[in-house]
Image 1 (cartoon, rainbow, N blue to C red):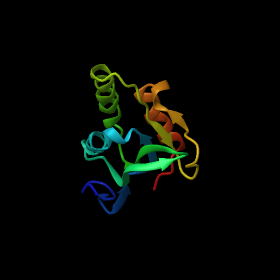
Image 2 (image 1 turned 135 degrees about the vertical axis):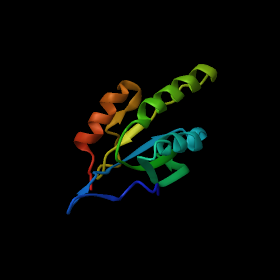
Image 3 (image 1 turned 60 degrees about the vertical axis):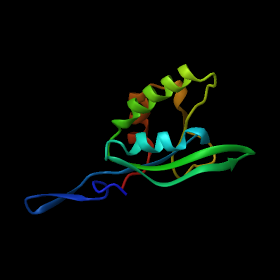
Length: 128
């Protein structure tokens, strides 16, 4: 876990808790390590559980379960994704899952802008 996640910041005598939103992403197993690095690159999000290859309805997928305080990494994910599709002849997507509904995706990231994905997570994902 990133050192900055899950910490309380103290202002005077009151402790302020920075919210952490919890959600999952699923995508291509081929890109597991790159996506993991992008999510954790800012220090304000971490993958608390990940699987480089799991099977869902007979298809191989990668799973990233994420805790995030901020979403500055999402535009970087989109930029990296666009570059991967530019240099490789294969299109792929990411699906967002919001607990407790983990059977069906809430969003296909291909159909939404990065700022819309962040806003959706802030509005719908559990935070503690």
